[in-house]
Length: 185
Image 1 (cartoon, rainbow, N blue to C red):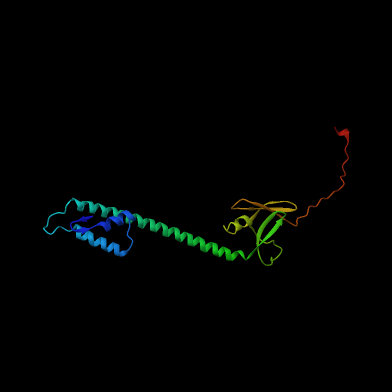
Image 2 (spheres, rainbow, N blue to C red; image 1 turned 60 degrees about the horizontal axis):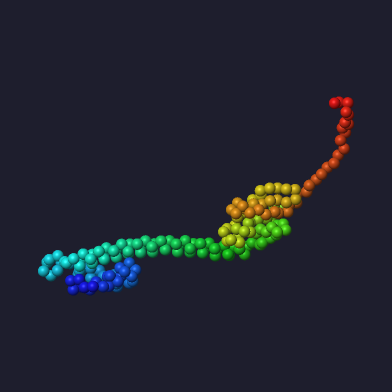
């Protein structure tokens, strides 16, 4: 398209193709063309109606550039979030080597830290499901205490596992010194 001796086909292509510009050189070229186009003609008269069409193309291009910038900003934020999650997962993978999967009861598994347990406290257990999903280390909390096993529950996924304990059940039997008599009734 030619307006006032200025070829604006490049402007039209930029608007149609991406709504943005491919290079800085394209930007400079279009800016020069717009400057020439929107100046007054040599005889000082206003430009013809084709100039109005070119102005509309420039406005459209500017709107598309703004939306492209917004999309770019959104993509950058998403990229930063993904990079943050990647670094968290990489750190989690490094930490995985510090834990062992143990069977707490038949068919029940949990993770515990490697190394000796200090004192007579049992090692802290971590939810195997959440650990495998790479969510995070979730400490299993004691939810029920029985005479031969403890029930531990994950606060995140609500999964339960059983763990044997050292509690012993004692039953004491004694003789009662009570005589029953039907005379009292």
